[in-house]
Length: 301
Image 1 (cartoon, rainbow, N blue to C red):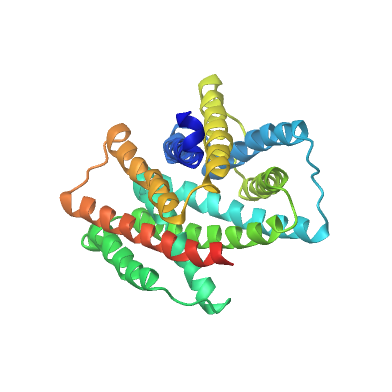
Image 2 (image 1 turned 90 degrees about the vertical axis):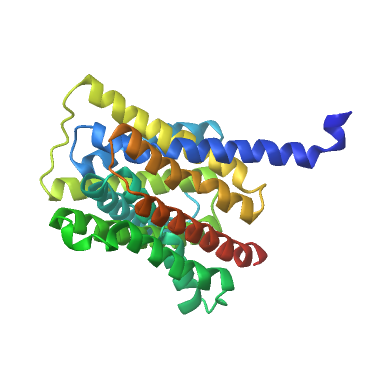
């Protein structure tokens, strides 16, 4: 009797749990990368290859068609290229600055998406975005700006790579949205994953990186990386995100960079000062405002 009386509340709870679980799983992405024992782009390639094979099987089991027309296919190819660049840059960023800061920098894509919305699609700049941008800059300054001169060249390069990765992810998001207008969710994600894996393979071969995996342990890490981050995490988020309001989605998804920072301190002994913690919290608040500030207009359209 109670379950039938509040079905919406029950559905919201299940959706929230799914998105929370997905965000927690994806937070381990940056932890897997240094443990794979392979070159940065190669580890990203195997993530997409293994994940793409699993998603292909799931798509076939659901009976969905892969080919939805030439235009969606072209959109997914461009999006896959952008995501391949994003992962190649982000994986190198992780090796230079650590999983926590790399994941935080990658989440700055919400500001690039907002900028594209205002400059290209003539969307109105909301007060949340206007507040979020200086908060994000201030948070980033507290994390890396105060000691910028003391950092090595590799660390500085890592920060730049993280921001570049965020921009590439923005391009991926935009083309994925255009492709999803005519395609089904499962087939769209599967094709985007396969295209990304293809381009990552080309990038790796072009840079002369070895596709060899050192041993069984490294294969297990790569397999766990693909299943946890590329399949389970995103399937949980995708299955629950449509039933939640924008503010709750933005808040729950902040678990990803927050936990990535925690894992960095626990597993890799990242030396973190109180000032850096304050900067990270400011940046996360900014990311939340940026997510909510853009989600509402998008949902209205």
